Length: 292
Image (cartoon, rainbow, N blue to C red):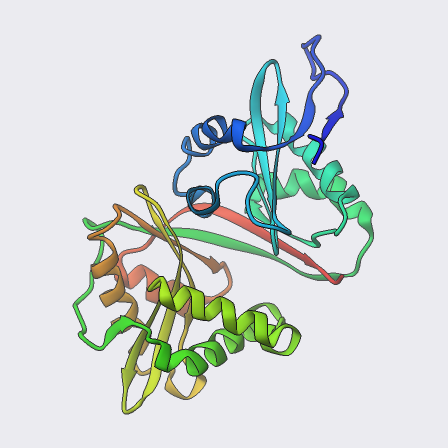
């Protein structure tokens, strides 16, 4: 595929125009170096690059904005759009590219100030708003963790595939109003199976069923990112999440120096749980999902 280059107006104070560039194998070292300047914020992107390299998997895409001979911002397109732009001049050109891209990805999740700027351009796609949420990124390290081990919290097995898949889909439907089992049942189950084989799903089982589960979405030498934190409704307010998440953190922090997760800033029970385990907020994110 021919490399995409979109000329943009010259940045203020520069005679050199910026350009949006589709990132390829020859850009890998430069992209990793930029993302590694904020390794917790970019743990998911760094993990995807480690697993897949550039240009990445089919139907996914990394693009960057270059000016003054340097890479100054990166956008990753998958099910969502993730943007890292330490130079704020990169945000508008990346948002213009995202708005014109086909297929359009109607969801953006990134640092709050980045999404604020991105939305000024991207909102002109004029799709109905599904939700607009502020989130806290919370981090725990070995020296702040307050948890006890629980031998029942272990990596999920393939024998638990159906149950893990059902609970993961229920969590998605509850949190973001998207049921992946209803939309893509076979593909979603294959994805969960792949992640179980990688020991990325962990479950706390008691009485023959899962009482709590989580997904280790990303893992690098700098950090791990936890997603899919879920307790079935009938098991809530019984301490399963505290025991399960705490035991997982004890195990995972032997492999990486920090763990992070997102939490909606209005979710008081989750915030209380994470604070009690020693997670501390380090930055604010914003998630905008459009219907489309």
